[in-house]
Image (cartoon, rainbow, N blue to C red; front, side, top):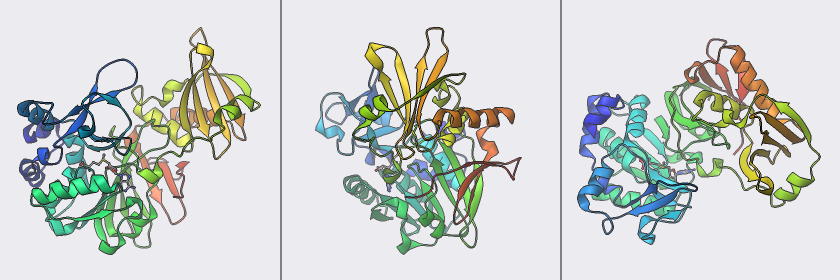
Length: 389
Ligand SMILES: C[S@@+](CC[C@H](N)C(=O)[O-])C[C@H]1O[C@@H](n2cnc3c(N)ncnc32)[C@H](O)[C@@H]1O
């Protein structure tokens, strides 16, 4: 695995290579789920020592793949013999991404690191191998996930500080840190991470919104007084959302609200494809920045074609994109703001600038605002991130 991660360029330096060669990934994922190919909703098949032969299991463990270890915040592979549906809520991230982030973190001997999202403990073990356990603190939200990671870390001889709690609050008792790295994504950089990073230290995390459109991996340097700034790295990486930053439940009276609200309908030249990261990662990132409080919902009305809704419960607004038989789109909007107009105008602004790539964006953080800007038009604010909890 180390050889192939070196070939892909994810693994670049000798100390991280030693860490990859030393940490046995199988100790951190003794069992996991693998996705089953097929139409419709993804099903997850358990991979355990009872169900899969040792050699095949090891081959999967040492492939550059993300292996899901928990579904719906409770299900583990031992709880089923058959493929099941569910939303992944914990995993061992693909080693290529883990290692690339660790390389990007720029640690040195003696660096103190705070990791958010222990998960299986694999990345925590790599950090502990590289820096010695005492320098590494890792926070995991889910007590059972944290318990399994703790046992795996101890069984492989690593001794980082493990904290069960909400990583959005960091871990003040171990501050200041030289580096903060998150393996779950956030909507904005939590104030606690900035407060707990020493001046000159840095934070590496993915930023995303509630549309699941696409994420931006960003590294910011923290300055005296609590400001920070840095660049998006331009890679197409994403992580599961940090739990308190995940989207809230939709309103109970959603369907009444959608059907009873007065709407306006118009033609639009921008279809819902702009939210599809597979079509254009940066376009989806830009569209998401325009409507950070929106959640997606697909509804097939009267067995007709799928209508894509964007719902912003806080703004009490929604937009519905309705496909036309000639391939064009109409949009129906309701509420205080025209959500789709925000997407259209943010995309038009990005288009007018020549569709700059994700690594042309940067993030500026002050005590009161987090602002995405374009690097070559420094003064111009591109989007403000939603702050709060
Ligand atoms: C992709 S997994 C982490 C992968 C892990 N670093 C590894 O190498 O196995 C993301 C983890 O973040 C955890 N998580 C989600 N929100 C969190 C939060 N607010 N604080 C700490 N951990 C959180 C999830 O429970 C999940 O275990």
